[in-house]
Image (cartoon, rainbow, N blue to C red):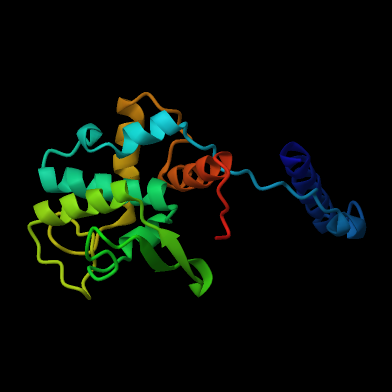
Length: 195
């Protein structure tokens, strides 16, 4: 479908060019539509690859608190199925204790949903909070950049690229692929994404 679409775009462009020169009447060319391309889903990581990515020991940051932060964010992406923007938008009150097993998240389109927070994710967030040099109030953002400001998603994406290289993972191993892996592994074990 993609090759056909590119070919049609080239033909339409040529016909418009020829029409401007008065050589052809290309009225019908505008009606030509390329076939719809199916949206491709991100390729999920294997369970063992995902565990390697989120492991605290595998983090490449030199500062312990930054390594803990990266591990906590990646663990929430894989362990709770959060989007990167949802994880970085969490406040100190959202996961205040290791007992918080459910998280209310407002995601794409302003839709609110409840997501599970697995014990491993709660533990990773608790470890990050313990090591973080900045005060995390209930209304302040949970995940901070190196200077204490909001954490930029590009930092997590860059960290994932470094991990991908260090762990010899395919180029399809991205933060969003971690979220997709959560859903794939949950469904593979008989879970239901709607509950």
